[in-house]
Length: 241
Ligand code: HEM
Image (cartoon, rainbow, N blue to C red; front, side, top):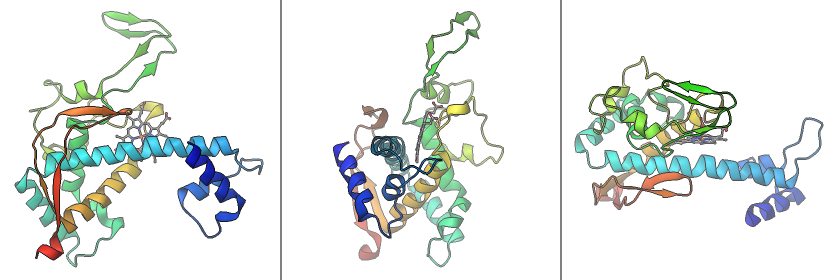
């Protein structure tokens, strides 16, 4: 927090000329009446972005690698998809959404190992969940993890089957909600998927990655679930060729 505060103050006292990064943009933001944003408020916004936007995406990416790296069949298919969409080899981020299998791997990862295994709601009015009636003021935790593994909703729920997300109809939001739902749904949803596609394209395209364990054991770091062990040996594809 103190480092962020120092950065915001330094940025506002003249160190931001020509900068268009997130820190400088928030540090120099103004309220609707034109007054500069309070330093504490700028720091709060940055902390929200760091906690909500960094750990979540980084940990989801770690989970994607855990699922995909032990699957040579999947890695081959991803390579073929990449070659089909970017035949010249150069990546155009604007076309990354055409990588349907890559996106399906991301979604299947968030189904099988959601980094937020539950989302909480404070009830403003009573909730009837037959046979229970939960009074206003109660707290309910819809569990992403449990819903994503229900035998009655998913075929082979414990298996990693990205193909189930290739169906363009999509999955109903009450069956799949890694980003939460309703009015408080994650504001970074689309950005996170975009970011993950780009990072995975770079990682899988440039590096040969070998995971030295197949464990899917999870542990909690801050608020999110992370792989307990995701040891990966990396070598540069270009150098190896
Ligand atoms: C894979 C990446 C991500 C996952 C899995 C994720 C997941 C979630 C979940 C489960 C919630 C709670 C939603 C609810 O209660 O219904 C949430 C809220 C939020 N997320 Fe994300 N998130 C991700 C990336 C991001 C990114 C990249 C940003 C910002 C750039 C972000 C910003 C936020 C914010 C500000 C909220 C609070 C929204 C509110 O309460 O109105 N998240 N996220």
